[in-house]
Image 1 (tube, one colour):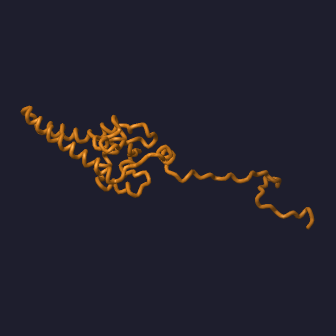
Image 2 (cartoon, helix red, strand yellow):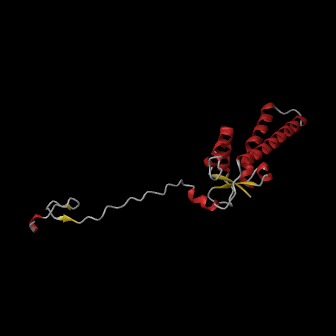
Image 3 (cartoon, one colour):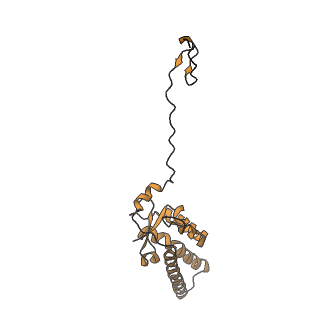
Length: 175
């Protein structure tokens, strides 16, 4: 084969005058790690113990008993106080129910049921931070809407996170 008849290198590009254009190797596309956004935060929780589904249900049951007790005591006190319109009574009762969990979880990191069973609700980003009030309301909303269905993921999840925990960027730990 004669030097003038070099094989054509199809990897080389030519400009309009026929000169070779130096090309670099194609850049390698680096795919992001196939972890979800919270996966990095999970490293912080590798030494923590996570509550079982039964423990979480027991905490919920304790909270329900407490809420019902407070509900009936408040209703009784409202009746003793005299003539209060029905809409005001309803507003007071509903407000108590809807504020109990978000307020306690935000300011104390747990409800009474969680506290008695040594559970804490933490931000997924930091094991020593409570979740914000917005995240607490998101958590309560999903927990209320989905009910027991929200707890289905607890048994299939390494960190025992329920759907409402995932939706609110929270995690429940055993202390």
